[in-house]
Image 1: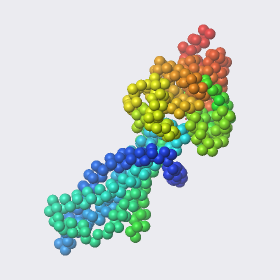
Image 2: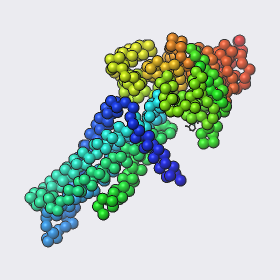
Image 3: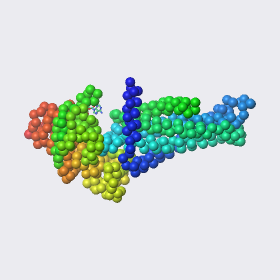
Image 4: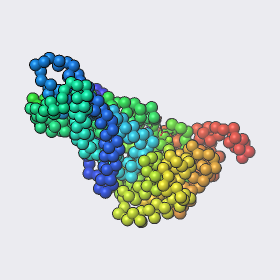
Amino acid sequence: MNFLYHLGRYAIFVKDVFRRPEKHRIFFSQIGKEMEALGLSSVGIVVIISFFMGAVITLQLAYNLEIPIIPKYTLGVGARDTMLLEFSSTMVSLILAGKVGSHIASQIGTMRVTEQIDVLDVMGINSANFLVLPKVVGMILMMPILVIISMGVGIIGGWLAGVVAGEVTSADFVYGLQYAFVPFYILYSLIKSVVFAFLITTIAGYWGYYTNGGSLEVGQSSTKAVVVSSIQILLFNLVLTQLMLA
Amino acid sequence: MIEAININKSFDNKIVLKDINASFKTGCTNLIIGQSGSGKTVLLKSLVGLHKPDSGSVMYDSRNFTAMSSDQKGEIRKEIGMLFQGSALFDSMNVEENVRFPLDMFTNKSLEERRERANFCLKRVNLENVNNLLPSEISGGMQKRVAIARAIALNPRYLFCDEPNSGLDPKTAIVIDELIQEITREYDMTTIINTHDMNSVLAIGENIIFIYNGAKYWEGSNEDIMHSDNKELNDFIFASKFFKKIRDRL
Ligand SMILES: Nc1ncnc2c1ncn2[C@@H]1O[C@H](COP(=O)(O)OP(=O)(O)O)[C@@H](O)[C@H]1O
Ligand SMILES: [Mg+2]
């Protein structure tokens, strides 16, 4: 019953993380640092991946929909909905689970095995709260921004690819972007991304915090963090989609 | 004075500490000695509450630490400084920030005052002009000194050191040992030091307890230690030919 053991310990861990921070001034400055370390530093990879995925999705649609009666603006609709509904929230979160999740788990895991966490505990500082809460809050604040960037860049990528490849005119694509637009999709994506940000940071924090051993185990924790948070993202994606779109 | 009363501790059926009774005196360097894996670190961490003993209690100047609520423990924790085996400096902070950290967290002093105190502590351990270096940029001996400066930043009454000179060359090791002893006397602290280094035992072993397989086998001072007839202790002390020769001369 390994699963139940981890679930229980994770629940207690999250409860500790969400205690009131001791020094507010330090807490807020930590949040700023984490927004930079976790969020700002991820803008590059989000931009690159979103641009290429937007482009590829549009071209795939174009090549698979070469039926004359289907209007060309469908490419705009397709690119938009794919980015808004799934790619910019779920796929970007999966990628960040790799980047941010492994970063957090190895950082906290290293602090555990080098007794830096003991230093905090012996002073009577709630180490789970002190180390992990700024990461959770920082990532929750940054994630919607990353998602919006991804949506914008992905659509630009789709537009550029479609137009350059001669599959669609700029006007048609832009018309498609506006066609049957459901603004709620953006909100839906943002809500999902906030949940995913919570999952990535708390799960990675959990595996790092409970690392036992040396540098080998730090590597294992980091792998666990990525695998488990990826699976949870997919699971919660299913649940949230059912809840919000059904 | 810190007292350990009937401390027992095991991890998943593996008994690590067996009924440890010991008292550690104020104003002198108390040593816990024993070979690697004998339970020194677990004992030290049980004394400061990083491990919860399965049974037994720890008294800080007659205050029962084990029975306290976590708020009450917090008060005692502010009187504790601890030096960990690998120094355990925060690697994302520079030297000054490391030493200032306890002050940042637990005092409402101005930045100016906190820096002043940090610099005072750094000076006390003979470190100057390294404030802006990261832990990775200084030597192991310097890291230990920064860790000592951080441990004494809040003027602790109790100082715990887990193998303070492991990984250091013999000369630096002695410097660190003597520094800890000086500070202990200067501020009248109760200091407990884990070590398996015979040089430390002879140099600063004012009050020694010897742990073997998780149980206390002997206690005394460095004056008595060479003349004990405890077999396990003798096997530990005279493990090297060098010390065997010394004993034969005595
Ligand atoms: N967290 C832990 N979980 C399980 N066993 C542990 C743990 N910490 C220490 N031990 C075991 O307790 C014994 C004593 O360890 P330790 O106190 O670190 O020895 P020392 O510091 O004297 O070298 C060792 O056998 C070690 O494997
Ligand atoms: Mg040890």
